[in-house]
Image (cartoon, rainbow, N blue to C red; front, side, top):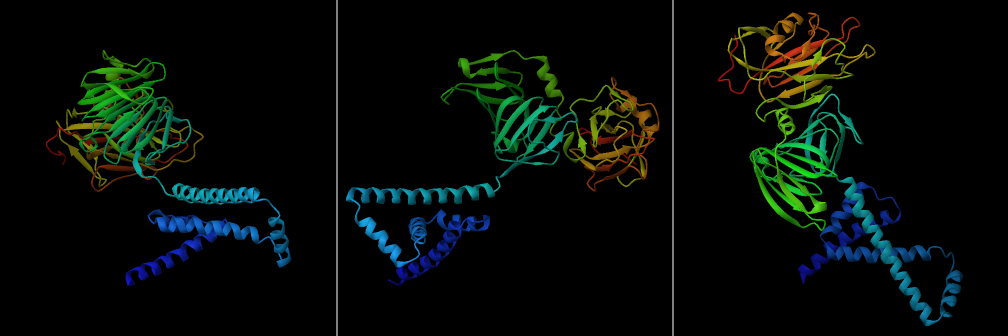
Amino acid sequence: MSSSSGSFEANADLRREVARLADIACEGALGPKETAALNELLENNLYLCQWFQNYVGLHSHLLVYRGYQSASDLEHMYEARAEKSRAKELSRKRFVAASIFAVVTVLMLAVGSTLFINTPLPIVGSITVISDDAEWNGEEYLPGDLLRKRDPLVLSKGSVSIQTNEGVIITALDDTSMRWFGEKELSLQNGRVLVHVVESGHGFQVRTRDCIVTDLGTRFMVDRNIDSGTTVVVDEGRVSAELISAEGATSHKMELLAGQAATFLQATDEAKSIPLLSEWKTAFDQLDRPDRGILRTSGAIRAPLRTPVVLTDGVHQTNGFASIFKERMGTALPHDLTVVSAAGNEVQLDAGTLVDSYLLHFNPPADVSQSGPGSITFRQPILGLILDGQGLVNSDSVLGISKTKYELNADRGFETPEDEWSISSDKFSITFHPGITADKLLDQCRVLLLHPENKAVTSR
C-alpha cells in the first residue's frame, strides 16, 4: 500500500510538470528547452501520455467557455442546447471529441517534430580535400566542414574527398549527387564515387537506384547514370553487388574481385560482367594511397587531383586560396639536398632518401588584395621545405613533374616575413598564410615528405 502511495505521489509531481508544460504549449510559447523536457516526460510513460491527452482536452473546453462573460450568458447557452434533438447532440459530441483528438494529435506531432528539428543528426564524416575548380549545385562546402546523416552533397564540377568517422575515404568526381544515410551507407543518385575502405570500415555500402554495393575489404568505384544504370569496378579486394528491382527486392548477387567490373540496370532487370576500361584505371591512379598523401586540409587551400601542365606566373591563378599539387612520389634524391626544417634552420637530406614531393602554389589575380590562412595534414612526416625561388628552380627537374612547365624566375618562392608558415611539432602538418605584394603575385613552396618505404629519416 505504501509503495502504491509513493508511486502516486511521484506521478502527481510529474503530472504537475506536464500540466505546466501543456499550459505553455497551449499558449503558443513552447520553446526548444520546454519541448525537450516535455518529450522526455512523455517518451517512456504511457500513463503520462494519456493524462496529457485528457488535460489538453479539458483545456480546449475551458477555452470555449472562457468566451462567456456572465451567468446569464451560460443560462441562455444551456437553454438553447436543451432544445436540440438527441441526434444533433450526439453529433455535436462526436465532433467535439474528434476536434479534441485532432488538437492533441497535432500538438504531440508538433512537440515531436520540434524536438526532431532541434536535435542535430549524428556526424558521419568531414570534408578533407576540395579541388580548386570545385563548383556546387546547392549547399557549398569548405575543407574541414562536417557532414551529418542525411546531408546532401551535390557537386557539379571538380572533385571532393570525404573521410568517415571509421576512416573510409570517398572521392566524388564531376557532376555527382549523393546523400549520407550513416557512417557505413551512402546513397548515390548520379555521378561517380571512388571508395577506399580501411579495415575499420569493412561493410561500407553504396546504394543506387539499380543496386547495393557492399565492401568486403577493398578499393572500388561506383558510377551511376540515369540511362545506362550503375557500373561497379573493383581496383583492389572484393565487393558484393546485388540488383534492386522496382519493388525493392534484391537479386542477381555478384561477387567482384580486383580487376573485375559489372553493370546493373533496374529498368531491364539486368546484371552482367563487363570488360575494364582504361579510364577507370586512370581514375584510381589519381587517388592517394591510405598510407601516404594528404590526410585532410582546412581553410584557404584546394587540392586538385591533377597537376596543371603550366605553372608559370599568371597562368594557373588562385582566387583567395592556395593550391597543393602532387608531384613525384618515391623519388630517390640523386644528391644531398638542402631543405628548411620545421625549426626554420637548414638541414641536409642524404642522397638516396626516398621522398614524396608536393608543390604549394599561390598566384592570385592582380585585383585580389588579401589571402586567407590554410593548413594541410599529410599521412607521412614532413622532411623539409624548399622555400627560396632558386632552390625551386634547381629542384624542378628532379622533384617536379616532367610534363609540367614551371616558372623560371627565381623570385617565385616564399619570402619572410610576408609569407608565413609553420610546421607542427609532430611534423605531419603545415600551416601557411601567403602575403600579397603589388610587384610579386606568385608564391610557391615545395614540401618534401618521407616516402613510406624509407627505413628511417635521413637528414643532418
